[in-house]
Image 1: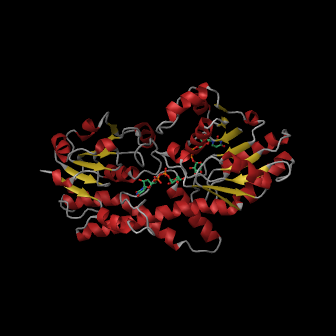
Image 2 (image 1 turned 90 degrees about the vertical axis):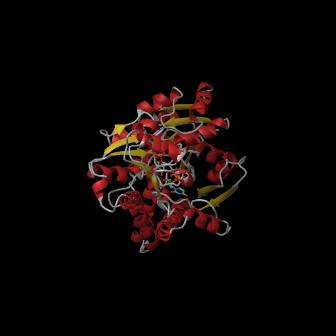
Image 3 (image 1 turned 60 degrees about the horizontal axis):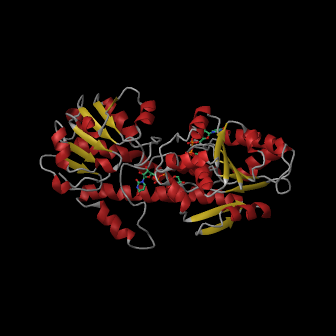
Length: 439
Ligand code: UDX
Ligand code: UDX
């Protein structure tokens, strides 16, 4: 099939690459010319495992082509809208990219005489596809949905860092549709996937996405609160999570306590669902708590450090401090809403000299904090520092504590993800979120 993707970010590019690898002809459209050139030169503008190698294959075979020009979407059977849906100041969803995209698509459809199907993949609040996208498409094309073109909502569930494998082995595919031709085309496109394909009304598909992300975020805030209790009680949260997760009704995943959830989706989507619920007269009390816990969680890292050094800030003020991990999770270069951001802000208030390191995220973090000292590797980030904060659980940070001790001036280690083996410590003052009694 000839497929179009508007927006060549994490969602659009990974999805296009995935479908291209299955033999479809994929046209990516992005307003960012630099991104378009990079994609056509087989250089992924983001770090995602396996993406560079895949791009090399599919750009050479011309199964994937990028451009800035909507007219290149002519004759696409299916066009996926994958532009960003950022948060407004009040947490509500900002639909300006979606609207501009629908307007331009409408003008493009006007010139088409096939039956293109427009599928929204961006995360949008319920009824956006029906009440915002569809009228814009009709008004700018002079054509009728269901008669001249199809409309659908197909949410994505790709995790950064494992997005290509998530694409190839989805847990489910959700298809929101209200016309048969769109339903048939989307089922055909996904027919070889082994998982269940769930066909639902447009707004149900939209809400499934928000409810899924918000539920996963709830699990994380829940276990983080239990982790903080474990700190006080001297218990290990991983034991508690294991005991909970073995109950198949609860499940093992997304019970890893840490410095709080970040990324381009969870914080933005929970806030948007809160705002949307309130607008619809349903108080989002659970989600308020989820965000409340998540807002405070990065501060736990500092709290543990200050408690370990006598309670007040005196022992950290002006000191050299290592921050290991800037990306919001491992295996990505994405730093959006990373828990490292509030931590660095607090450390800067204390005039700490920060030596920051991340295997992939430095360039993106530099855009937020241009003046930090960025280390070329983990060893130089640790050199002569008085405290080390492990924020992201990159594999390369998992070393014996003696390694940390040998590099640091004073080995105070705050391990927010519990990746180090506390038993191997000698001199170090080791504190970990959710692992009470580690001193
Ligand atoms: C984003 C959202 O975070 C996610 O919730 C939603 O489901 C899809 O969009 P992501 O792919 O991570 O996911 O966004 P981003 O990396 O910002 O990519 C969006 C791309 O769209 C960018 O490359 C941007 O240049 C492009 N874009 C944006 C357009 O091509 N046209 C526009 O009008 C706006
Ligand atoms: C998420 C959703 O999982 C995906 O389905 C959706 O479509 C896009 O948003 P992503 O943000 O890429 O994916 O990463 P995810 O693995 O879900 O992690 C999100 C955040 O939660 C990260 O900051 C991660 O460190 C944190 N997390 C995750 C935990 O703190 N504990 C966990 O157990 C799991």
